[in-house]
Length: 622
Image (cartoon, rainbow, N blue to C red):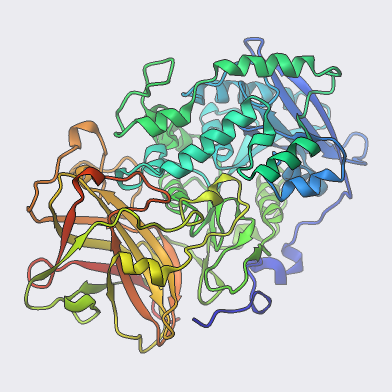
């Protein structure tokens, strides 16, 4: 496949050619201090405060707040070690804080109770403590002489979810939030199609336990990296007043009683299952942001969502948030990024490299508008920016899904054909014995890139891996085809088992036979029930509640219809390339195996009245 070299293209922001749109960096350096702030119940919350060095006396600045369940910063044995450690593992929130302060902001990073150097214990249902403590910290911020009284909240992953939660406080200081690469529906994100994303959940659980117990050297999996961490890092940064680290030791000792939310996620099967490790009677919905969408809308706080096309479940999550909570001034950007946005991760780029997109500057453009009434052209820009891979180009739209996108069906057919000419007249089927050794590798959508953003997304060796799957491939395309939106697949299937996983991969096949994964989606057979009720938030496909009452076993031999949407994408299939739909029953690298003990054979039907197909949202040339 002819790929572009990294020097020939860029994912740099659309406004980089407009100098007037770039926010100025007013300060060359930052000053950091750390202290404890007492929450309303007396629990000591550790915060790092970053301010611009050389801030003129009497000048007040807006503040960016991050609430992390991980740790706010780590202490190095020597300053030179920081750059090395950044290549081994995540290093807290310090890098972002030091950068944004140069634009004239204060930044407050707080360890959530039970995390980092904060006292208390972490609950499985952490939302009540997070919003109460966050509200207390905002009270503290606005009382400081350097504060202009305006606060914005930002964060990646779980830190971004705390920003969503904060909108429910209706705190008068909170003026805007920027949740990045995070969730709106926790169950839907961690159990895609009702299947547990076990690698992601286990990896994050292990990381969090290392952090909570101040064993940061355990975060890397590699033993050499662990040794280097021991040599270079003292541990979590203590507060300035904690000169002998005794307070840090006391706080960490309290973390022994932390509840393990990851174990809850690994244990539950349905949306309404009780969280078994929670100290209160609760389900996962208790703290899912979508449950609180009405309060989020009532806040009228502008929300800027950041997402990456291959970043686990999060592009759909961020689109659902953007569509469900359309507060005035809200925006979304979706780029060619993995989790956290550090990598330019388009599969069409030959050598993966760090992103050219200045995430902090874009965040400043947003917060400048709502925290200090300074407009860098943002107010006149379209609210949606997205990157089309293949074209390697930024585009804009005022609406999502894109109104001009044409639903274009490609039908499965005999002999592995995928046809844009309609279904075959005669019904037939293909039998596929599920191969439980099939996988997508450890750096695919739900792979290790979610554990800290150190890797680009990769689906290596697809030509070889596709030999383990059932595939349907189109003829070479006569012209370029741009797909932007949410592909929708309909499969008519039967199985010899009472349950199963139905995994689908939309792929780009080059004239030389190289195969790239464009997007994918999954559905568990027992979880297939579609609700007649309206979905509680915006979805591009059928709404499945995934409740225990909706769980219905497959009847061996019975043909059923499954319709579900693939994760959103914007991709150009180039002329001469082919479109492929690959079907699997397992991903040993990332997903919970389903019905392995039954060794199922599935039949996929096509033609006649059982016309299995994938419908692509094709955007006509401008």
